[in-house]
Length: 147
Image 1 (cartoon, one colour):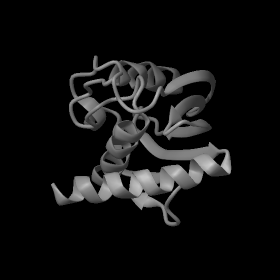
Image 2 (tube, helix red, strand yellow; image 1 turned 90 degrees about the vertical axis):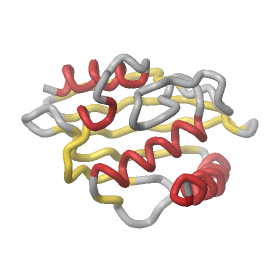
Image 3 (spheres, helix red, strand yellow; image 1 turned 120 degrees about the vertical axis):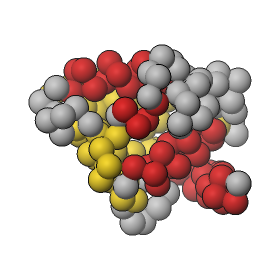
């Protein structure tokens, strides 16, 4: 099951999934951010966090969480370097550079039997990157919520 989801995830990142995140996320998906203490529950808030991350990271992530459009001119150079798939779970390792800081992390994904994402957990290192992301993601989320 996870293989099909990951294939669709990569299509989404390339702007090739017409339904965007609505096609990938379960209504009750839970998003665990490395910069927010509490889990974020629901499709809409998860879409907001993923859009803010894409705007912060740049690279081969989507520019707009709803449209699936990509933006390689963003501030970073986000790209996946490894993936481990098993059952309904995946771990995707990524690298990026934002504000001159190297970022390394993993997305830990779990989907249900319908192939929809039910859990999205992000872990990031080193500490300097986490601190910088906390500032930039916070500013981006405020800007997006005000719009």
